[in-house]
Length: 367
Image (tube, rainbow, N blue to C red; front, side):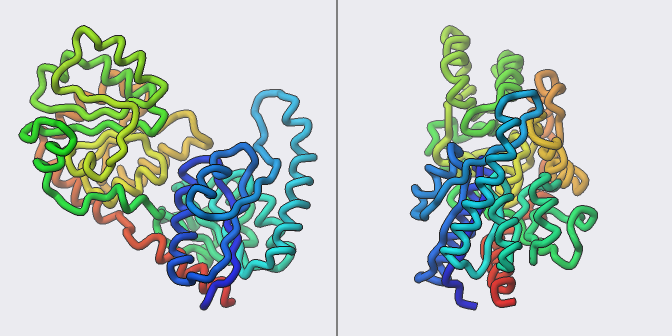
């Protein structure tokens, strides 16, 4: 079905925003004349990232409930009412054929109003355990696109479409030539490589785990490529200024993730939904350290979806400082285990996620 007017709502984190933009891009690719409008939350990163991707966006004055007693909790009901009214006005004016929610504060009021106005809605759930907003919205959604199996206990089975998460295809290696990738990164082309990625802001636990085992790394046969995050770069640089090992390469951020993935033999990562989906396409033996600082511990649930299929190793955050680096070195040396993890994680990849999601959107709009 030809799509002419679509609203996409949600955001707050890159894990919500990237899938939203990937879905919009696929819709635009199929329907060049389509008008796509985003509804986000004021002050959140989608208000910058979405226009940068070439799409229009309007923000709702909405935020979540704070667990501690704050003044913002007292004004929250008024913000919700205001956001519902604004979302209703946008929808009535724009007249979309379908409204898509990708999670985040803004998707709640937007999809609630779309349901009241009898406009078809679709949810895209990135995690293995849905957040509260999507669990509420699912009751009236026409379809739910998920990235993990066995969500029938949370969503109605007949609404579920197992599509996977759209990922940054630019980050997926197109070649398996490790030696050339290592040269490109300024690494020793003949040394096995462990890649550590803690997100653009870094991950304190992963950083502490490396610093606790600098001597072990120096004495090992591997080289470490370490994305430590901009908040930690200066401190780490200072601590290692007199004794930086030649086989430890750290930076605030890795721009060329495809080459970094290609160069690696073992990958250490947090277990955000999009990180996990990317790793499933990269197909390298991976160690996941779920962040404990996320709602409903969903990163652990994301990681366990791989662990139960023998597709990754999980190390708990509080165990990482002691175990992470020794486990990574042991995994590299265990070729049989590495090959098994690599084979199994590749089986879980969904390279056509964006296309499959838009297939479902077109079906929902047609109904």
